[in-house]
Length: 414
Image (cartoon, rainbow, N blue to C red; front, top):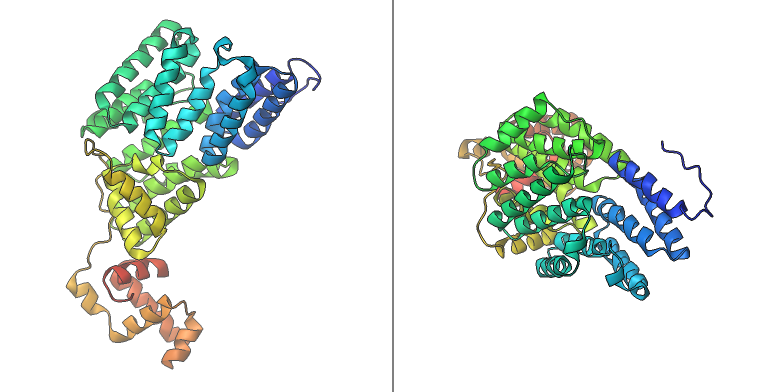
């Protein structure tokens, strides 16, 4: 752990907190990074130091975003922007950070017009004065915005500019965002060409970069997506990423781990498990206010949303995402092509369920434990357990929720 050995009365105390927090973020320690950034901002206000405050915001924004504090984050940025008004934004060379922060939250909320307007106006007003490091992150946000607007050619132009800035001013890609090669491959993937993405993943596996832990795990998530595309088991990698995300409250990564697990189970025909994983995706995303995160998945997520609505799994939120997706121009297709909807079971499978097994399913659907089911049917508890094992076997599932999901989809139960 990083030690902070400097007096809180020092003029550089706020800047020191900011420096410590940036290192903590790069090491995936987002909870402690947030604590130090909030302290840094408070100290900056006490000392009337707008430059330090804005610097703190540059790291606080991704920290709050990745921890699922979307609405609270935007509100905080708006309040800090109000605090900065007496300092005259035109006199603050790093004021664009405020616009970067607002655009980040607008984008996730799917307020695309607000995001585009804020970014464009800031570029016109302050873009000429950006330092090289800020240019990198500003172009990265422009890339994200163009991808969200389904403008792949514009996204490629942003990526070209980003790489040009990097080549002129830097030697190694040691930022916390994934490398340009990843995004170049993703653009090809969105155009329907998976080969560059698979090639990038193979190279990454053979030669993982020596970089900060945050970027490394961001790119490992990309690798997991490539594994699913190749029908290779991503679960060991996802479990490793998930462990770090849980201990550091990195909500975005937890959502992506569950989503990629969903795709994996769907590709393997394990539809009950796919739906269970997707339920976790919807619960987390809905709780924390993520919107664009799911919309950006494109076509593969649509059948999952439709099945969730059908089964009453976070149906209101799933319908919101589906409606917003349907409003998007149909320019892109994301290339994880797996069967993730609930398929109709073959007639032989459905007919194989006996009347007694259907009775058991209906009683399970009512929320009854095995003892109550046994009493209602006047049979032994061991007999009920035997019926349940047979149901699981015939439907190809492993849990009650999985069996109920398929039974509802087939109209066996309501």
